[in-house]
Amino acid sequence: MALLRGVWGALSALGKSGADLCADCGNRVRFPLGVSYVPRWFSSAVSSYPKKPMTKYVRFSKEQLPLFKAQNPGMKNQELIKKIAQLWRELPDAEKKIYEDAYKADWQAYREEINRIQDALTPSQIISLEKEIMQKRLKRKALIKKRELTMLGKPKRPRSAYNIYVAERFQETKDVSSQVKMKIVNENWKNLPSSQKQVYVQLAKDDKIRYDNEMKSWEGQMAEVGRDDLVRRSAKFKENTGH
Image 1 (cartoon, rainbow, N blue to C red):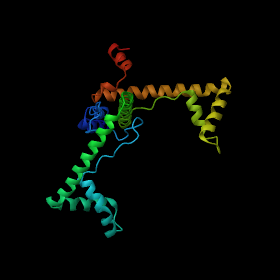
Image 2 (cartoon, rainbow, N blue to C red; image 1 turned 60 degrees about the vertical axis):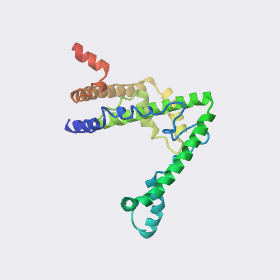
Image 3 (spheres, rainbow, N blue to C red; image 1 turned 180 degrees about the horizontal axis):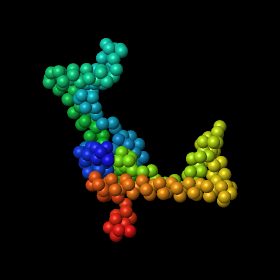
Image 4 (cartoon, rainbow, N blue to C red; image 1 turned 30 degrees about the horizontal axis):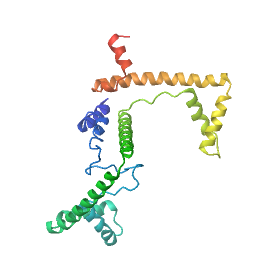
């Protein structure tokens, strides 16, 4: 429980939950697209997407890294980067301005190219991009949520009888591709006698009991640390009604 509170404390320091960290991921995206933010995957609707210009420090680092590597052949990149960062901090403002001016020039060219692409978008391409942006946002939020639940120790869902059978038999099928393995395992499952299938049905029932017990304990822990949003409605109903 102490470890759980520590994990939750770390998440709380960043935001209400891991999912909330990405709640505004797509708020910067509006159509017509703004030059302040264009998705790097800028995707299927647009064939050519310009790369964002390098910042002044990134440009400086990219120039210096080969030189530092040549001078320090046995040094790790992490140490080289530290040395480059130190050199950048000590660089006179007049020399930094050269990199800043280069960045501004590249940024202006980038804006012009993005504007050109925007003006050439058809209504159907805009709709396609809007859908893709939404799908990417939802996928990213789901991934962040999954990682958060893993970090918080949510029990693994129970397996079905079929899934238990597949996991057991899949490894036994050798010297063929995964696709062929699945085909063989599926066919064997279909032809498996009911008496043998019952073994896996019972294993699945046992796994469901395991899951229910672990979830009950986990949801109690989540409620204790203030994460009622992770407690299932059915569990809340049982708690409120006493059933």
